[in-house]
Amino acid sequence: MGKSRVHWLCFPFLRLTSSFRKCPLSKRSLIIASVCVVHLLLVVSHFGYSQHQRERGIDKDKYRNARGLYNLDISDALPDSVALQTGASFVVPTRSNVVYITLKSKRLKPAHIRGTIRPKLRRKVRRNKDAISAFTHYKLGTLERDAGQIKRNFASKTSLGETRDVYYKSLDITHTSHTDTQIDSHISYIRIYSQRAPPWLSPQDVEAMRFLADANVLRIKEVSHGDSPTILIFESETSVPMKNQKHTQRSNVCGGQCGVINSPVDTTEVFAFHLDRVLGLNRTLPAVSRKFSFLHDGQPCPVVSWDASLYPEGLLAGRSTVRLTWGEYQNSLKQKCWHKNISPKPDSGCFTVHHYEWSKLALFDFLLQIHNRLDQSCCGFRPRQEDVCVELGHHAQCGDPNHIQLTNIIHRDHDPKHLVFTNNKGFFDRNEDNLDFRLLKGIKELPELAVSVLKSKRLREKLLQSLFLDQTYWESQGGRQGIDKLIDVIERRAKVLLTYINAHGIKVITMHV
Image (cartoon, rainbow, N blue to C red):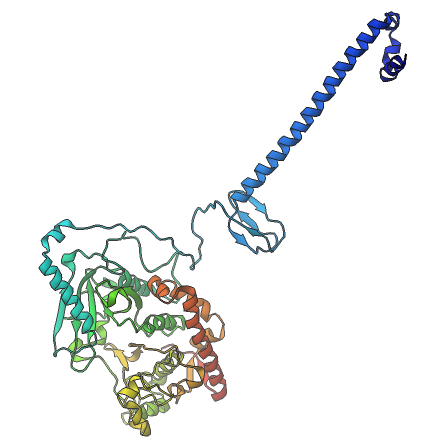
């Protein structure tokens, strides 16, 4: 009777069925039991289906989150609401300290950043079997001995007019900037990944840099004249372009396009070239750093563009040099020679160099502390015992400074009013309390463009962009960390120079000459 009450409470609709009431008790119990079983099955199946759907939803969320994680680009300490592009755009949660780990990055093309590092490419080695078989061991040994002789005699003197040529063409050396192996022709050690080079570098500068860094070496020449230091020149198969032949002279020294190889210790030459261009002076010759496997044990050497216009009658006759003493130099500064294109009087003591050129030279030499032009006797600072001026006894001449001869004052044969800054041996290890202020003596004006770069606080940015182009130099200085240390020195000297300008009332004027 208790079961019957429960059934009626659970299924009140059964009361409405008259036929159901008339059925025997046993039959009614059987029907109710069947209905309950069916109902129980329906409830259980519905609950199981709902649980299965929830589990599938959780799995989909996990899979979706996992795919999103794998497709993220590397990003640490991202700012708020940064959208990452990985084929589909989404917004990163606004948590600045979240670090995303990339397991699979997708990059269609390199970013337009000059600091982008190009991945290393596998070099293809091409060996010329005919050339190797044609060379006997005796000839190969002779060639190696000649190359060793060049290295040993880098700073040695040879007789007047003597040149020594060592031909490497027969060894099939088609690329010697880093190794004696053939590399893909489109690979250059001058890295320009954006659409154009920095604006302070002209197309001629870029062309010269690519030649110096990548040109195939035809032969090496060692040339000397009298007491002048030996010059080591490499010549390439590349001929001088027509647009550069206006003031280029062919001589017995270089029949085409050449580069002058300096000692590995003269690395300042490359830095000086980029600093000159960044400051807008444009007085140095293009220079890059390059490795030669047959010279200096493969160490990077500064290579400077050969300019025949500096030698009007050939290398053996000497450069176009302005010869004057310190006293004559100071007098020419007072006379403002060729200022406003006014021809000086015959008895004024002026030389061919324009007045503004000395201002540019003084600023440039002060930043790099180059003293071999205006102060070869080291009278303006405390030299070390190992400095050349002390070893050669030049420092003793400081007692009579007016008669000290200026050196390395160079101009082109066709342009005697403008100087060319060569042999730029600077010093980065000289402290601020021992700077050579003698380089600035007598200077009353400085170029506005160069001073504005020093004041703009963009000197570091521009030097980094410019020096990054020369891959060999960049790597030889220790990468970004080493380059930053060099720029630190220049920035500190720039602050000293700006203070000097204010303290001495030096005018900053436009110098378009």
